[in-house]
Length: 219
Ligand code: AP5
Image 1 (cartoon, rainbow, N blue to C red):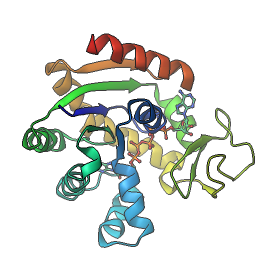
Image 2 (cartoon, rainbow, N blue to C red):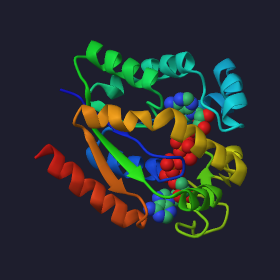
Image 3 (tube, rainbow, N blue to C red):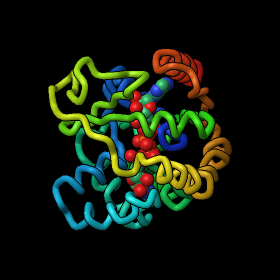
């Protein structure tokens, strides 16, 4: 049976950072809805251009487009053993669609680590983030600086700051998250798969707590 883990949490809390570590450890694919939109944007697809108008304001891309994109991604062969889902689902309609998709694959959502931190930490992390242009490696100017400023340690590509990481946009993303995504906390708690993780610690500590909580969950 395939393993699907959903990383839930507000913008900038560290979902992408932890998803990459977890994916490497578990050998599951990391599927990030934000990265998929940004890839579409880089390739100037119709979906990318449409998504940009929502992303720039910190709003969610409409459910039908997002669900369609994720359905296509997780039906690829590299997701046959499962995936680490980062940034999807983000609304009750997306969560219901994911349940239906996985049911079709004779699978289900296994575990939902829910990473939390207060607003000031989210703003500080998002506004100090630098992302690698080639492969999405994530840095922070204070907490995880690259060895050479503006250059990715892993692949030497250019680092850039996301357009939606301006302080005002981050605040709006958090408001949108509180209104549209928070209902998923109770949805997954009700399914018995929610695992609460304190995201205020440093990256190593959050990883340790996440791995420990997952081991206990699967015991
Ligand atoms: P998306 O790219 O998914 O953004 P997000 O969920 O808002 O999350 P972020 O990528 O901002 O943060 P993160 O939690 O991954 O943190 P990270 O690890 O990078 O979505 C962007 C947009 O796309 C949305 O606004 C929406 O428009 C659209 N979209 C995406 N999915 C959608 C969906 N399902 N439906 C509709 N629309 C959708 O870390 C942040 C920074 O902090 C980094 O610099 C990192 O180095 C640092 N850091 C991480 N952990 C720590 C730590 N423990 N201590 C110190 N620093 C840390």
